[in-house]
Image (cartoon, rainbow, N blue to C red; front, side, top):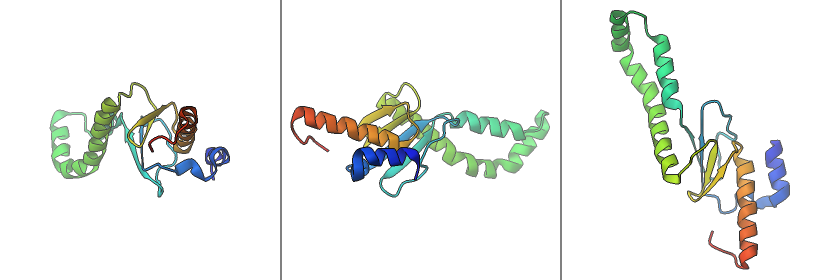
Length: 147
């Protein structure tokens, strides 16, 4: 168990994942996001700089002269498309969603398509912050609120 998960569970007990159905993480390739998967909720991780990484990896394999580069691209086009298409689609979707959520800095974690938590790459720590904020807003309003 990671330290952040243990800390989050001490703070919230078993309520850490209560009401959580979807989490979207917006990060760049240099940011380490934990966890990478979840069985408790839908987890999507968007690497917003993925397109530039793809371009760099393709350019590394290209021969230096134009004729050889064209021949290499023709010979490797199908493989490149298979490898690149999911990465590019993920980055494009992430950029579109980041604009929709008005995310202006990274990292950012969106909980249930409603609340943005900035500055964290640890999903469990972000969920703990989300749950604390939700609990304090419910107790401040004197009602259970909408989940």
